[in-house]
Length: 427
Image (cartoon, rainbow, N blue to C red; front, side):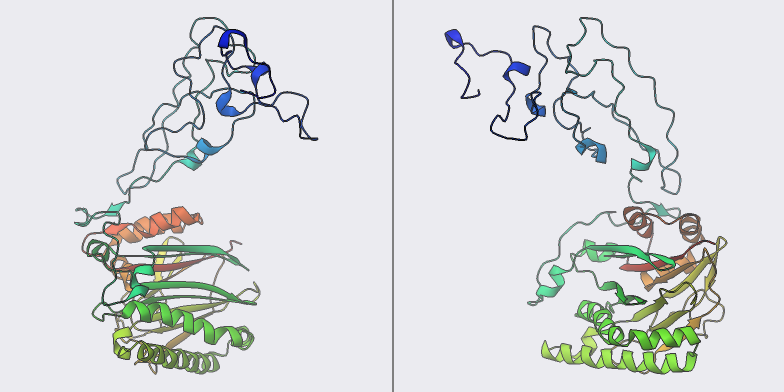
């Protein structure tokens, strides 16, 4: 009760209503009309609130949507309860168009609700199609993967390795840079989740003036500290690239492939040397930090459609154009395979850097840079290529949608998965 009001006679507590709503008389900016707290609003008088009326945010059990947390206008009263809905899922796991909404129920008979409360026959809250969740993680192939679709055990400290438990299960990033839109994700594999092991992959998106560096790295699973290596090598590569961004940009602009290969080779060698030094400071043999590396350098200038590529070890560099997948891996000895499956690793194989300049970029192309956790199933599973090609070749997804798509599961492929996609602006 407001302490400035007189006490009601006989100890009776009046029904809350406009005359009892709290006001802020001491506030010089207070509006003249009473201000009601949403959770205190109740229809005055003898008419009880409808049985299906609720107070506060409207949340269907198990379903939380953005509009559940939108504040209702002051004085609008309780909102109508939304009926539960089902999110239909296509055979490949994606959402399908929802059926037409049922007509709203007729208002119940009885006295008209007083001013200040919502009509009892108001339309229910309908979630727009853009707010519909894609549903559980999809899978392709005849059989579902044996592992659970979501993380189970959380990694624990093993051998005093605090770094491993501090790595998140999933990382997602993205943005726009010049003529390209970027989406990136790095996800712990099903087998590592099941064994309560940390994610050994890493992904990086960093800007250096007029140059964008994106990279993925795959720590070698047989080495106990490879997660140090994967996260360290992308960080150290960025450390080497950023001070030389202008030089690299000029090389891309002029198409100087030989000079680009020479400079990026020296940058990778310097990053690998520093990675080995870090391993030794931890008391680890450098080999236990073994990791692959793949990176793209992208100019912001739309007049420079050249993309620089470098790699050490396995993984994939793919292009999605006109609904078809193309191999852009510079290895050159794959015999027509979609990707390379080499296993050279840093910090030891720093002399085996492969480079290429991609000079035939077209509007609407999608470049896909990934570790072998995604590249291998792309090679062997046409359904996965069809699934991702049908989505990534159609439009740029939002971050959450991209993460869902990048996690589409395939039985027997349970490794960590990192991917960076670059959508070229359409013509």
